[in-house]
Image (cartoon, rainbow, N blue to C red; front, side, top):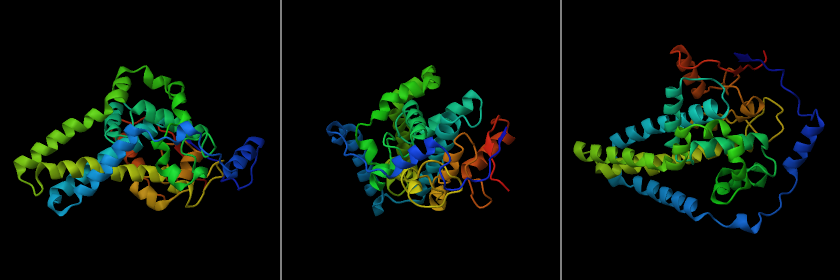
Length: 307
């Protein structure tokens, strides 16, 4: 299935709703209410611990080529789980896949520790409904730091809408279980890597592999993912006149396996393909094409850039 596009619109609002939304993009934001200014202790503490662990991972005594390989493989697994599994497959249903393929991809995405899949999907669907408006939970008009990561350290009203936006997932016991226990996935991963490192006698031992595979990997994946919320709403170019601040940013696209073609995505959220022009390389789209060749991806929705 192919979604064709109209020629790119100009930067002129073409409807009353567009004009209303565009006005909201530049209006001053009111200060956060008192209850939202408080930091969430659990999330803040976890993020602080992961960043401290990432710094320790970079100490010379924990470096090894095996750790670099483990980091690279798990980075690919985790980022692809987020972009291909949680984002394009589950959130936007831009293609269909057998249940076992979907669940493997979602498990891969859950390794990113970006909340459970139900919350992740619900918040992203909410973002698309209100992108860069005052009720967008990572509203770019509130500032680069807020859009990047500060939003997640505070209570956000968008969480109240997650259940309403994820009825398709909440009916599945697998998603309900994973939404509650996603953090536990790090335990068997860490145990396996620790004993592998100890038995193989790698430099830095099992602890070195664990530090590179969990806190260092998570911190890198976090900031790459957050750049899609921050950098691609501040810098880059626009192919389409979507009523938000989304931009296409090539270096974010490289790091995030194609998610940096963000203006394209906001113009056509249900397209499995984000890189629409010949030079907009989309690594996740290449994986979707591979799944199609294997017969594991069907009913693929694809936007096309006008000739």
